[in-house]
Length: 335
Ligand SMILES: *[C@@H]1O[C@H](CO)[C@@H](O)[C@H](O)[C@H]1NC(C)=O
Ligand SMILES: *[C@@H]1O[C@H](CO)[C@@H](O)[C@H](O)[C@H]1NC(C)=O
Ligand SMILES: *[C@@H]1O[C@H](CO)[C@@H](O)[C@H](O)[C@H]1NC(C)=O
Image 1 (cartoon, rainbow, N blue to C red):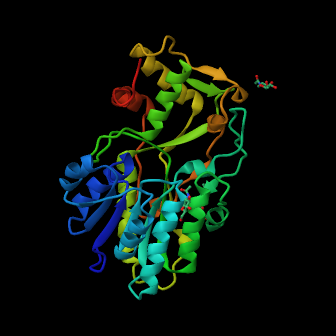
Image 2: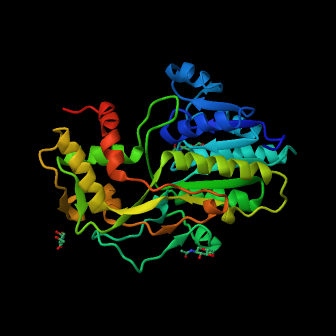
């Protein structure tokens, strides 16, 4: 690690991705001084036990977030990919830091591959649809605020382009695998699939369900963050910086929604939570509007991380569902 990167402000330490990143950063970069924004004081002891300093506050404490973002060499946001005020508070701090004559701050932000969802509504995979390649700068430049998470990615890319911060965006697929973090949290994705199946009393897919999502293992996601962090410290002194070449998609493989629903249905049936194991094909028009993602696909290629030596393993979603559905269920109220 370069000597002039010593402090990090971390958002998301109690979460699934952020907590896992925290655990591995502590191991690999023990000299890094990490300060973390923590909402609930009940988590302070667990956070302190990892050797980092908790600060009490929520995303609404904009001045506090700005202050700590101005102070730290690196800000890592693994807390939220949709909260614009949070991101603007961070960017304000980084701008203040730059204008005060300090070395440019580094921002490592977390987006999500849903930004690249197509607009398919029938559950059919469009194999001629646009392929988003993180190694194609034009693809990253064509992210717009109307895309999911795009309203956050765009101001961050703009900040990197304006030149007051070095910005890095890690964009994970649906993350699976056990949390490595201090506060036990299960995969947001599996939790969402389980919840959706419980509410509808069946695992669901739309139409023929050939539309594809992407998945990646938490250990690989964490490894990519560490590689991006290392790269960011090496690039610290750069005068010219290209944020469009610093967008990292993290995916291991794609999987159809019909398969996802099949695994979810089978594992919930096995636990007597659903009455039928087979998933049910539905029409998107029968679901609430926020289910639109269920019919759409992500066609993505992850190249940038591989240039850093990142080599994600194959992920068995079936195995992961069987192994971790219990952890998800424990955290939900199942009647
Ligand atoms: C964002 O912050 C501004 C103040 O800076 C506030 O007026 C606004 O309500 C906030 N928006 C949301 C969605 O919280
Ligand atoms: C992704 O983009 C890079 C850089 O242009 C290119 O070398 C690579 O072939 C592309 N990959 C795919 C699968 O299109
Ligand atoms: C879905 O519902 C719409 C509106 O009710 C209908 O027009 C369409 O034919 C349905 N599609 C399928 C595949 O059932």
